[in-house]
Figure: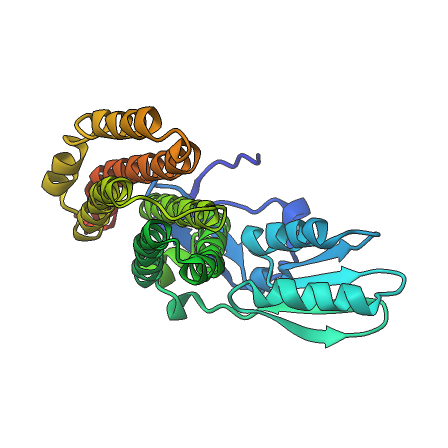
Length: 340
């Protein structure tokens, strides 16, 4: 950390000097222009022009499998690098195929250039084209439909529908990773607050809610996998019980998301008031099915456990809904005009 004393010149202008070591490192010369960006916390960020253009990194690929390579690329995508160079002594055809598949699974990541030893990926995501409010709604729509279809597939032992639900999980993952990238970029560059229309504190809540929705989608996939493992159809009585528990869980999530979008603390508190009321019903359903039909107990237990977790994620979303108005008011207070 550098410290400087604030000085005064001309009777009304305050100024501070810049550390020469830092200025040389980032390429600041005499007469250069820098941007001064105030934040909600009261801090002032100094950003040299051209600094974002240096947002590039290199992945030196070893004898990695798909999972390792995917983790390495996704980590750099989330951190916010605009250019990712994947390099090796010689990139094999199979490795090129893996890079292409990984890039297709990330919003806005495209192969820009290729050679025998390198593949250059460019993240062409414009934050203005993907407002987080719209991304959250889209993520919710997909996750909500996944849970409904997963339960329907389980109750009807519909393997085709169950496979479709599992495939849709990739769509939710892509959106969740996009929001995580946007949030990381915002933490690094306060200038993006203007583009986002949200402060870091507000965006953190959106990021957290999308993360909860991504977990809900994962459990829809888990229910679908339980469907694919069924050896016999689910009895009508058991299916009715599962459907009832699913309706309770999805209702919690839908109202929680609505409370977040509408910034309604009243609705959020109504959702949270239901936290204790449903857990006993899940336990009774699991016990009744297990006692009367032990052969169905394992698959039913997996589904009920996922539905109970989905319900809990809904309550987590409602808790974030309580934070949104506070974050909005804080931003408004920081940005309100002051009489000096």
